[in-house]
Image (cartoon, rainbow, N blue to C red):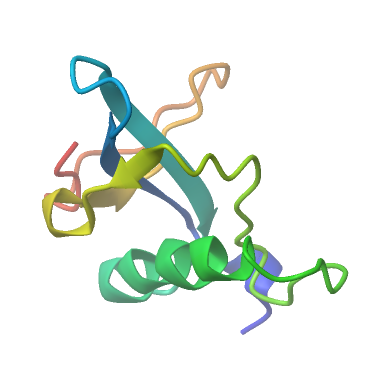
Length: 100
């Protein structure tokens, strides 16, 4: 199956600022994946690539940009589900796949 044919997933990773402990938020990654477990690992690989020079388009279409050294991602607290485009008129059906 071509990566373009895969459903888009959303991976929400809680973040906190190590320089200013009161600041926190969520970093949202989106991309195609054949399963939730595949989607869960993709942002970790993409985040690891932010520390290396760009190598062009990624075949898996997961990218991470704007790496900020003072922000720490809380990978164990990650949630994964199918992505719902907030601008779409069609919403993904809740088939029990959503955890967000």
